[in-house]
Image (tube, rainbow, N blue to C red; front, side, top):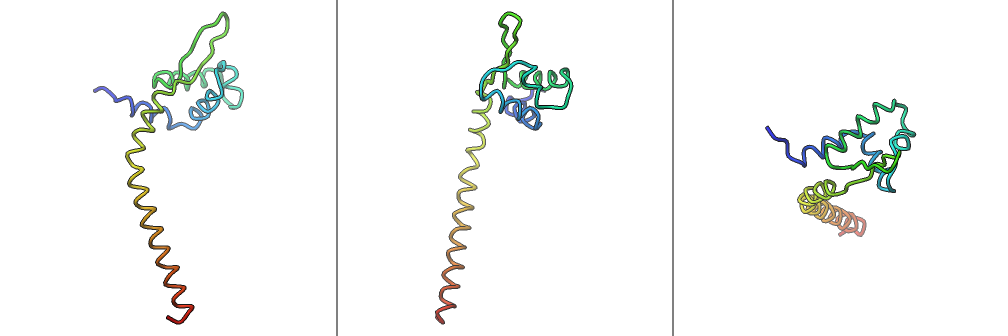
Amino acid sequence: MAVDSLSTTFAALSDPTRRAILAHLAAGPATVKELSAPFAMSGPAVSKHLRVLEHAGLIARGREAQWRPCRLEAAPLKEVAEWAENYRKFWDANFERLDEYLQHLKEKERNHEHGE
């Protein structure tokens, strides 16, 4: 059974270490050593996270002489954003109803204070 790309992306994003790595790469390419610096984990553990991100298409690894920089690949994140956008209308409608209800409560309180 094939897994869709959105599921693969969400699985990769489910880990806070991988999200932190992506945040770091949003500032520009970095080496594995630079990416592993903020974490209390071994190089192989960080490399495992990088493999998951690479499999999901969220990063790409280059080769420049001795340097193997990792860089962010944002296309899968665009797919996540487009998916989430489908739910924006739902949340906007809920917030509008909540705002209307709060306005109703304020009006009711104002009327009560003025003895109406």
